Image (cartoon, rainbow, N blue to C red):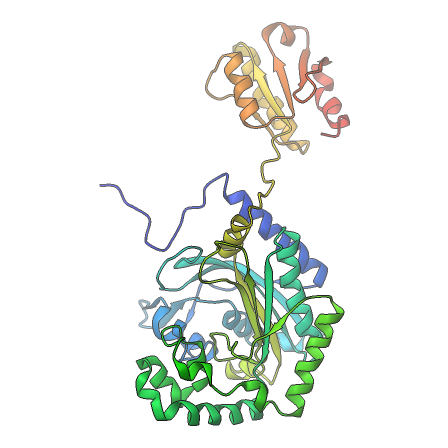
Length: 423
């Protein structure tokens, strides 16, 4: 009986995985320019971390976490997102005492959520995210947003839309919370069970409900923008000023609340406007989470970050018809004729590789014509041919596959000659 892949997961095969590597490489390159440094956290954490860090009213905690007991009867959870783990490490390793502040981190790796699989969404997915901890300056909010926008642009995406909102500070959120309760309470029975529970715990989350999205009360719900105090308004105005200075277009959407409980002040999403991308257009989301570090046991520390799915990144590239140039070909393919020549190419191949070149040879005892075909499939820039006669004369033939030009080289000087070609 064959064993199939679990639902909601995927195999990323050669030919496709190179796209992932290219995106990951570009993300790391940008993080280096922005001075964000990689952090790697465990794939599973104590369940309590996500209950406190993500929020027990979120869909992630209520419906989507992969939670299990280990042999010590401890509750553990496969990480559903990266921020809580990163902040836990920040507190655990006392990074708030680092000389360089703010602490700027990035992560990349698999996350796990039990949700309905659909285009670009999986139960195991790869997330790239950044976190900046230790600054209350709206300029760092703009920097975080700009890194995300620039990553998409540098990979060729053009049909993007940035949407921002302010969730305000504690005082603003409290005033807005009371207004939401007054608004929804008289007719809360018309909403789903989740929304009914959220009314008391976190009514802001009602605005993020997918099931009741079209309810008439959603359209008339009080806007957080109307309840921002002077400090929150000033903060949001400054963020918009900085985005304009960075020439990053944006729209303000008062209904943008994001799906996690820890957000305050800045919230943002980057969406794809590409035709045929799908009903769920969000590519990236993030925001400010002042208070999360304290919730996890650390000192008062402001923070902001974002996360994006590599799967949805690739789906957006496909929707815009962007082909990533991932197959650059190999530098040299060694063709051998005869047993002695075949044996010799084993060492010669190693020398090429150790000299810094990508190289390959035949392992199937194919005829010369089939070996050349293999070189073509691998897009070899050069093919080196070694037969019994060449070996006896200490020579090797090198063919430039783009020009057809051929030269005979002293076998002892082959590696040096190839290096001078600057392949």
